[in-house]
Image (cartoon, rainbow, N blue to C red; front, side, top):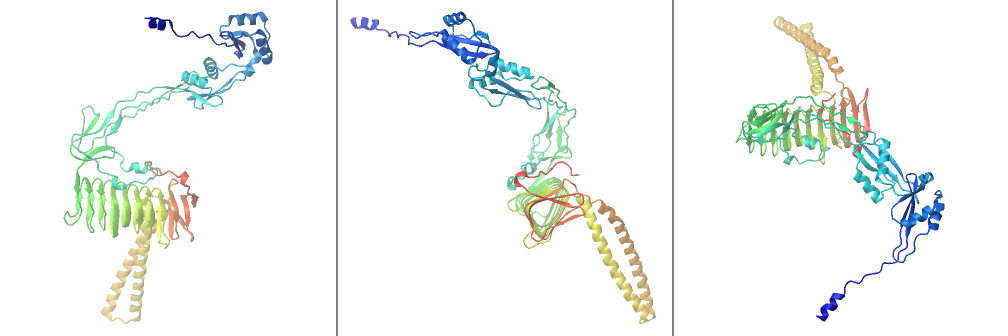
Length: 569
């Protein structure tokens, strides 16, 4: 069809090439001047030798024969061709600075850009500079290519990394339960935690896997970017799973299982399962509780009742004038108001929201949120308050480690005493000895007054013969009693200096008061005493010096650290 033939003859119009002049590039690279010539397109004009010669004069490139330039222009390959040696062009080239880290585990380069007339640096040049600087391992060529492509000039860019050695280990024990209950709170920079969400009791069923040994880790040597080998250390410690009560070890000794239902915990390096009892409340319906395992009280403990647990003890609601004792830790999700008669004794840590009118003996850390008031606290490790209030009022605290709160004392100048940095047993024995001396001295004074009165009665002769005989007998008895008391006082006084000399406070123990310490507060480090001035003091840290208590300011941005696991000096 005519239309079809017409369409068949009409194809895409062939466009004439656009007129584009020839171009050339003259640059320095590795001691030579290079020339690149691109021929013209279409009707464009070619590159003239004079243009190249003028550029050479401008840059200071040594002269070459005109024929050489004409031949390269006629060839017009578009490739860089070495034209002439040009030592002076080095001043135009890019510079590459290599920096190797002090530990030899990384290297970076800083590329300073080339000046006009020099080529951009190439990968081979950078690699050459790295090798010359001593970098031979861990070089990231792709990173260098990207740097050169983006022209990231003038700033250091890491381009090589070493390999850290892999520490070799024998079998390692992995616990399938929380072996450090309460520790996450300690490691959160004393960040607040909701005690109601914290649980010390971890129930497991019979047959549950409690722990296992994971395969050894083979030691692998590391390497620095300089190629130097870093020998890998190997831990030669032999790790075994400690099977405690109600657990079963697999025949190959690599897995530990529960043999009964109960609370799993780690004690003295051994994993054990202890029975757990759970009660709603402790009151007249349950009576006092004494149990070898762990005890969970969902509600409260009423006044006058006692709870003793061989393991951990956890109470969901309030505790009144009651007695709590645990071989492990005690968690009071609210707190205790003992009304002057509350008592707590625990072998692990004590966690509570508040402690009021209570006597506490804790062989671990005392960790309270809001307040300690009108209480006697003995903490063998640290005592830390970290809540919104974090105050201690009208209490007597003996802390073996360090102490931390926001407010110590109050505006009413309530007598508050804090003794820290000395082993509590030693300090309490020292106090008991001093109190014993005073008590015996009072007894001695009383008997001595009775002897004086009896002596006057006998001397005046106002007693008849039978009465005088009885008086003489009483006098002998009082004198014997006085001699006994004197011997006891002498024994106590003989013991007292040795105890006093042992009251050397740990240099690691500190008292941190984030906000205010009021008048009426006395802080002692062994025999060193600090009394708060009348105006009080704010934001302070106290620690024991050689012969005095040292005071420094507290900075929220530079909080001191408390070491919870390491033993105190």
